[in-house]
Image (cartoon, rainbow, N blue to C red):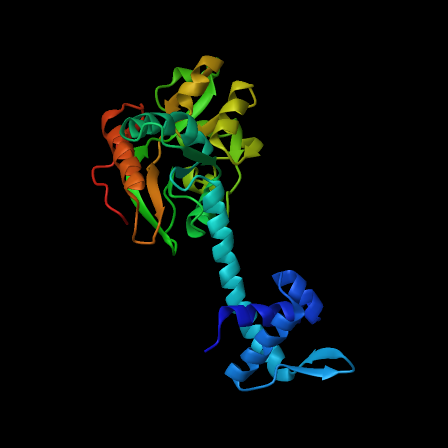
Length: 310
């Protein structure tokens, strides 16, 4: 029966090219390497190396076998790296991925509620954009995410959390601030802070919010993040269509918001790696998030009536 130590010796010998190098890599003696290789050849039933002028030359069978070994060692190396990551990142804690705009408005009350249930528990917050959140979920690098809804993806589950109204942000001195509701036509020939797509799954926001091609804003600046759009508005570069969670942060900086007339709604979700297994800690975070969604008044935000995985 093939043993892992034999395969490890074979791989080291193929990589280093000499039994001396393989022995050093494995911290054993040359004779031990020779014995492991001889035993492996006996178990496999074919020769792996020919000795030519004192040198070991791999046979064609060895080359073919090495390809299979590398495929399996790559999987083992990924497991080793995953274990190292878990070890370094406090495996008894919780890792939460969150979009920047939600990390200032929505995440703090969720964490406050969560830490009532788990006082003193270490929490790591990865504040990243949507595409990076999806990568972290698929690669099992985060336990749970708080983010905007996204199209179904393999390896990820979503659970509805909140809905938010689309707003229009502007300086308090802007003429449109006198209106109670901003309509798409109001943006015609206005200086507007526009959007950059966050990834291949993103739709152009102009198409989403301004489907009428006759409405032509002047896009002075474009950016990925809502906080940056609010900051540009506060600095007087124009107006912008924004989500609601960052509004309280920017109101003291001379920014006002008005509802924007559109059928679009912001959909916010909890997202998990779809392993089918969740820890008690992740379950407590979920309960804290749903409690906050149900009981807190964020303004321009409503709780989803049903919270079922989709």
